[in-house]
Image 1 (cartoon, rainbow, N blue to C red):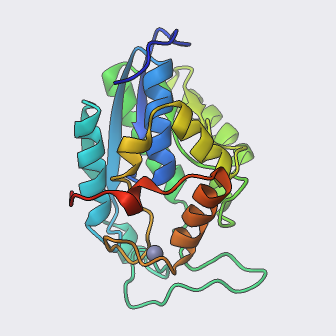
Image 2 (cartoon, rainbow, N blue to C red):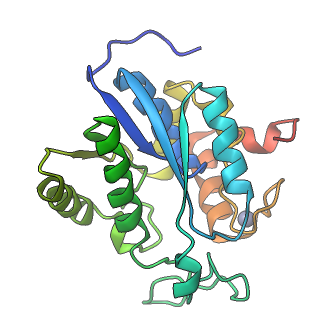
Length: 229
Ligand code: ZN
């Protein structure tokens, strides 16, 4: 049950939804701030089906329409550990980690804008964050601001890309999730690069997630939940 708060926007919004911790928190931010919210999930050949299962479950929990789009060309481009399961996940000093899928957010957001256009929506929400980000350049504010401009020009419509988590640490994101009553949804969100439930606890995504909950001083509801998706 969402608390009744004054909506900031009287418009509808489309959320780029991965089923992960950040976009799940953004889903609740969107529910608090927009009249109606829809979500779009991209199946880009990521290692594990669990991301889609999480997204579907969380959308159902919140009664949000979820559009699933296949973008399977990323696996043909290759050379990253998220779409090529033969690669070990690694991160060398001074380089982007090999979990970087080049241009992923540029394509996701452009594709979301195209779908939003068909729905008459001009507000797009994404959970990208430059504070705790893994070095991904397409998660930065300047990339997103430039992209919003390109999309607005290309569609001849003023499109806004909202990034509520952009300047937040993972702990602040957890605090926001608590405020927004997002913990029940977060219990079904997925972060682990290994694609397992329960999560591995060892990979960079698990470590970053655990750090945020530890700093926020609450247990991760994903780890304490008792039911399978
Ligand atoms: Zn993991």
